[in-house]
Each structure stands twice: as structure tokens, then as C-alpha cells.
Length: 72
Picture 1 (cartoon, rainbow, N blue to C red):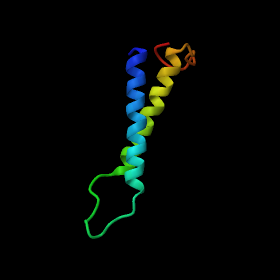
Picture 2: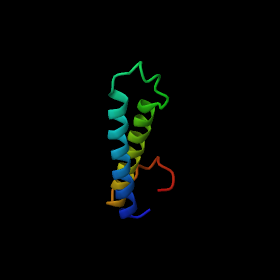
Picture 3: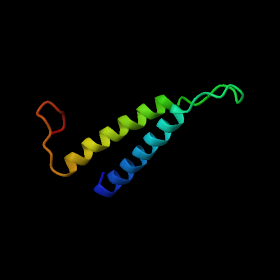
């Protein structure tokens, strides 16, 4: 994956993390019924993806892989 694709996916993952974090932090509204979307789980998943993309970005900029990582 090249640098442009990584930066675009990182921006999308960060935006998804912020949006789902905002939606998950809203107080429940019993008049509307239960929330059917697991916003906090989606926030954790988007943050994990952003972390992986940051590691990939570091390797694109020349960071060395540790010897225990396969494929080095």
C-alpha cells in the first residue's frame, strides 16, 4: 500500500473514531428506544485500525521492523 492510500485510510479511521466516540458518549434517550448500534465497540475497532495504520505509516517512512516480526 502506498503513502497516499495509507494517509486517506488513516484520515477515515480517525474520523470514524471521533464520530463513533461522540455517538457512544451521548446519554440514552428512553423515548426513542434502545440504541441498536454498538457505538463504543465500533470506536474501539476504528481506533485499533488507526493504530495499525500508524505503524504502517512508520514503516513507510523507514522504521525498522523488530527481528521477531515475520516478513522482515
